[in-house]
Amino acid sequence: MYTPRHFALDDDRMRALLASADTAQLVTAHEHGPVATLLPVVWRPDGPPAGLGSLILHVTRVNPVWREPYLGDALAILSGPDAYVHADWYASNADAPGVPTWNYVTVHAYGPLIIHDDPDWLREAVWELSDRFGYDSRRVADDATARMLRAIVGIELPIGRIEAKAKLNQNRTPDDVRGAIDGLRSAGHDAMADAMTEISVPHAEARQRLIEDVKGRRLGEVRPASPPTLT
Image 1 (cartoon, rainbow, N blue to C red):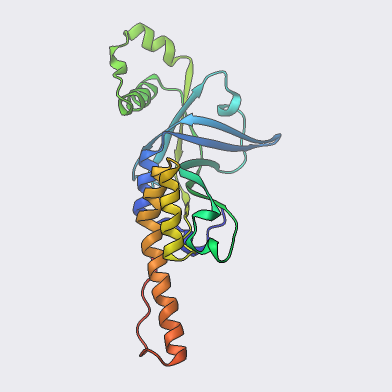
Image 2 (image 1 turned 90 degrees about the vertical axis):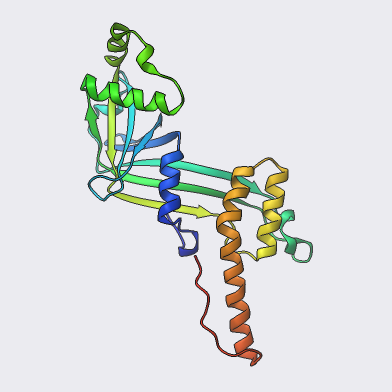
């Protein structure tokens, strides 16, 4: 995934997205081509191989994705908020019309697939998933649970490498960013507006201070100062 430095998602926010994602697009490569499968997911943090934890998923047994030989690592795509950003929301658009864009937050997790067919492992994985959404699967009769577990196969993806990106207008002025946030809230995209408030506003403000400092030094208007850190 192409990720300019100013769009990189920091480690804490990356982990927060892994913990909050409900589903993942599991992408596997096979001799006949790539296959993408949307699956419910639970992230188990930390652990080998890279301290990034594992993604826990399951598929129906008749789905061939778990038994077909695959090439290299698998990719799991987990998505945060995303939304269309109207160009008229930018403060600068009145004087210099620009173009709209699409903002998004995403994490790409790579790793090998481990297939689990053990009933005890499957039961724990299914209970963990149902507990997360507020249902106690332990209420189901043991014989019914055993029957349903025979119909699924567990998949574990130990994360060996990860890419995390937040494309949130960090490259625009603070006024443009705030205008986009107001527009997103008016359109009902509060999650995206919250993400931009947390990430984009501080970045845009630091970027603006840096630009003004460089301009001032060139014009001899201000004394040299240490540039602010962009985060």
